[in-house]
Image 1 (tube, rainbow, N blue to C red):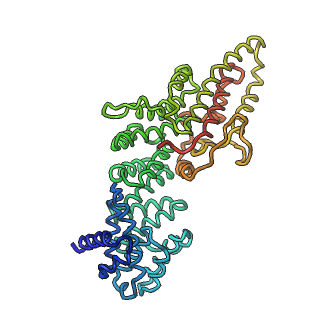
Image 2 (image 1 turned 180 degrees about the horizontal axis):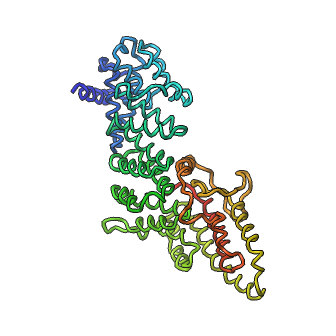
Image 3 (image 1 turned 180 degrees about the vertical axis):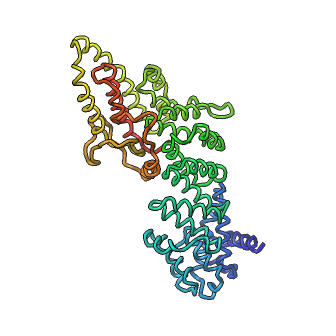
Length: 475
């Protein structure tokens, strides 16, 4: 009841303050730091649940809490709840200057002061120092309101170097603070870490829990990035049935966008079955409302079959796409796909005529060496795929080397692409269902002396160059 009264008073102060925290405290100077911080947490929990209208209230409460903590004296911090509130405020996105100044006036126990020092290092962008200070402190040994945030911060700090430990800490954060912004953040981070660890079961469970509880969080776009990358990285371990179970909990529009993004990534990575499945689900829609007229679905479903025997059908489908409804990066992708589709047909006819005029092909003894040379050319002539890790190692040119003449310039690597690559790289299976066109295995399966295979080799090289056209994932 006292907490509810505090919330009501805090909200009333927001309405009376007219933009000035000082004016708010003039209205009521008896509000304790822990009451303000608790009000801030409840507003943040509403935001995590999808109440975006509470975002301005969060900003105002942060201002009020900051002003109150700056004005706090040693007497205020004699109450342990107020010092814990200071630490929670810091780990909720607070001002490190305020935390450091307030902690210097407090006569708290050594462990609490150590946590404050670690929080300040974390907020000031010094992760190594923060880890060194916070690592010995067990979040389960401190009060739950502080332990949940401490577990979340430690899990985030250790994610890169100790992912297994980080996952355990994120589980502790959720255990200590269910149904809150802490749990939302812990689940969101767990999805990416599970994919990095190659743990398909944990990835599916964390994704299911996030969609069930926090799909409308303002941070859900970050979950979507990790989810799409994880599906690609773990495609050999996650069934299409499980994927459909997770997406069925989304609203139709979000489900369509997720499938479009999966289809795009899968087509580029040569995962034909996954691309076909995701494209079909995107076109199918839900409740009788299909998306067959969505040009993205047509484009992505065509990419995985652009060098197939049904090339005439693919070319026809590509020709029906309304370019005006595509993003700039997808228009470039369409141009490249149409160019590749055209090359699949035209060179075959010319090569067949040359073969007839030239007579018998070279001896079989020369074929292995030339095939190996073609494979090497495939590997060396193309820069690495942006936003996706090659499924088996192949030599590539240095980053500053010029690309192949026919390849369009690669866009700058974005932070999102780098994060996707990091999330997906360690979990790639050893044997992909459909190898990327630039891998030696794929090239070795084709005979460069056969007119059709020679055209396919060229088309595959050009298809790999499509990878360089990737920009931001479709929104």
